[in-house]
Image (cartoon, rainbow, N blue to C red; front, side, top):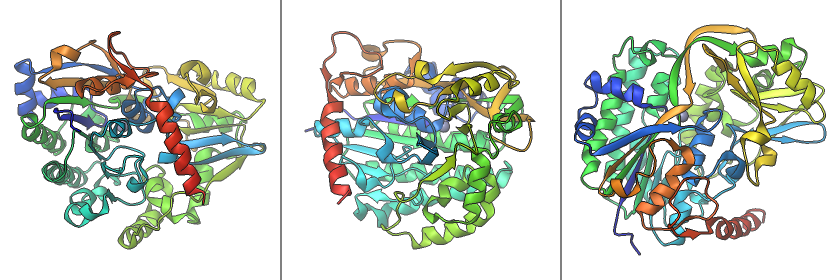
Length: 486
Ligand SMILES: [Zn+2]
């Protein structure tokens, strides 16, 4: 079966219209400028998940539901056991709701999914007909089906080292820009090689060049950064005429923070943690007990970067299907920490200490409000939600260091990203002028003439058909899990 239409979801990690407008003004995106000035693309702001973090936001974009239903709240999955916080890095099996390619597969439509967070290992998908290239946060980069690897893998493994360097030197940004061009070339080649109805590709490079780069995000300078956006503009020019519709989307925007508040420092200072979550990780991982996690961790935790880098390069060379992301979880006992902030802005409290934790959070400078997790998220996975979500007060951003209370002048994610819609059916589906992450699935499915999920959190007009993707998917997941456990 075919939809008779082909649509592209073009993911631009970390981009906002404010930044894109600057890129257009500086001449980096002439084709997008042409499309916008001719009214061929409609545009609006995209409200990210709370807090605006890459894994939950992309998962909401790919599922059409809020984190309370899909269960991805950050980079880590946290369990409250009897004696402590148990955790592991988020894995695809932790995603509690079908993603768009799995929905399409139920109607025999084919998807190409590239660099969507939480897609490793790609062959474990519930969409055997899909072509999937997993995201950069995984321990290795692989392609499903595997016979495509000899021809395509090199396009997607290039330049991953560029963004690891914290200084945003010209050479590191250049390496990232080269990667964006090679990556785009690989996507184009793949579009011409395999059958597809939906292509969902995420460019991570814009996010990488905006971290630790306040002069660029603040509009004060631009060198090789422009090349990264030019690579995306070039990709848009080459794909616009061969697809029926395009949804441009980002998971969050970026902002300059004049002041950053390190919440873990205050959790420690006010007696809620002997050792912070971040310090626990540093100690555990300097012993390198879990090699397959290393690549993901080296991107998040600077202290172990050096050891990890050399190990990681050895590992990727030897990478085979035997690399496992299953094996390891860790525990922080409650007597070492009554509260943890595993990722910026989300707090888990030890059982029966919620009130004490709240009163401490309210004393931390730079915090505008402390929201209760169960009121922010809704759905069958809301029980796993963080206890509290912190909203910073301008000009503060929330940061994760343990050894110093404040830092100055850096960048951070911003809750407003972008949505743009172009192609043949824009006027039929331009339902609203301001969008949420979970609006993308009903939008894309309608463009493909498929029903929308019965319990999506996204907007769609009342006359549109619905289908219970979740219950069908849930049966398939249970069958898969039984097989996996044998
Ligand atoms: Zn992101």
